[in-house]
Amino acid sequence: MHKRHNAIRIGLFGVAVAAIAALGIISFASRSALANDTVTLLNAGTVEYAGHITAKVQTDCGIAAYSIDPSLDLPEDGNYKRAALSEAFDTSRETYLENEVAYALYCSYGAPGFDASLWPSAWYDKTPMTPERYYVLCSALVCDLVQQSSNSALAGCDEAFVTWCNENVLGYDTTRQPINADTATRWLVVASCNNVPERFVSSCYAVTTGAASQTFISYDATGGINLQLSSTLADVTTANQLYSTDDETYAICRDENCSDVVEEITFEGGYACCDVLEPGEYFIKQTHSAAAFEADGSIYCVEVEGAATYRRSACLIEHTPKTTSPDILVRIDPQRQTSLAQGDASFVGATYTVMYFDSYIKTIDEAENTRPTRTWVVATDEYGSIRMDYEHLNAGEDFFLNAENNSVLPLGTLLICEAKASRGYTASSEKTLLNITLDANEQITIEGDFEDGRVAVAAGAVIRGGLEIRQQSSSSSSLVAKPGAQFCIRNISDSSVYVAGSWYAPGADIMTVTAEVWDSNGDGALSLDGSDICIATTDTDHDGYDETLPYGTYEIRMTQPGEGGETTNERTVLSIRSPQGSIVCADDTTSAQ
Image (cartoon, rainbow, N blue to C red; front, side, top):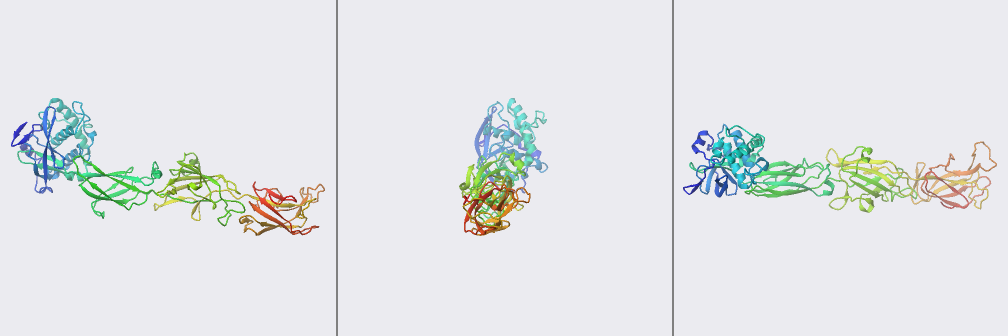
């Protein structure tokens, strides 16, 4: 190491400035956009390697500055003019050389695009890489890129280091023939140099410190922003591929009104970043929402810092997935005209198995052969609706909940089937498949049948049966069937009933049945054995199966006595219950069933 005019002179990458000028490499033209700009260079000590010592120079921001003529004097600390790379190199070569040099800086240690895989994984003596060793290698690469000669870049280094550096970094052998095109740092840089961000290229510059002292290449201190999307309903979106954020975009802006846009970035997998930003305050605003999420009207403010080692500020963006909270209407009684069940039946207590799949399924067979994401067994309310809440949950897993702790249904598919009927109804074997999806306007919708604005699913019908009054040969009751006797059937159930196309409220007379002799064997004559008897019945075809009256309670009274009979005020109360189609018979000992 030699001293001259209080400057350190290191003989590592020696090349005469006259030779550089002769090559036409450095040319600071007056047209440089940075011609009147200055930068402070500081001596940050030395780096020892391979038996040599090189000076480490950096800017006042701590950014490394790389010498392209280290054989000259090291300048004193101070302010020096700088120029953009595009103005520093011979214009006949600047198109590719500017990007190559800029990309080498971009991938250097501490820079925005530092990538250890582009550099040797260990030092030439197999010891670990360090920040100082990355500095040495980047200095050699930048010097060689500018000079197009490894002789000056490696002058004075021991043979082992020269061989190792040529093979692993510079990509040339001693005869200047290209080698290791797939692994040497130089060729990896050259192959990808067009990927260097334009903002970073603009931040790079060259600094001259005098005719007898070194020239440096460096870049401005910048920072970046890491953006991460966070779902407000993580339980809904985690592992659900229907909630993709890959087309969500945000604008990075310099002003609070978000009119001065630096860049629009698109998320992938819930993450995005914006790099090479000048230090300062930035404002972030959504410009396009992913289809499965609600629009985000918030503006986020982030402070970006420029540092010697590049860093990104974090910005967490919370967004809300689109969900729905339907009342799933159960058509327990398709004939009902009110929200009440027929007769004495009830809508309360039917149970339905609801299976949710976090994908779109087109057929019931496919759903039955797919493992559901979650399964619930829920009970119906008094209106025959399935309500997806804990009050009506009989069994199963937790519901998906929104911020207000109300249950919601995410995008996906529902398979619904009845597990148990409520009182007075039969269970349906039909299954209902519903897709919760997005329409053409990206609004959440449910594909299925609707009734009163709610989704309708399959359900069983009300249980029905019949009534009859028979002729009694020995009876203490006068309510007996004589030929021509008529009996009125009145609804005394809790609710209206639907019979023969009409509704009958509690207390209303439904129909009158007339007693007649039933010719059981069809011979046209009254049988002496008593098999042909007189019956007043709703079972008009006498087949023993009848669905005239819904599940309920009915009063029977005589309105006409018939042949040989007497009018009576006696009334009998009978009830229709299960099984379906059964006939309830009134006799002298029965008042209700």
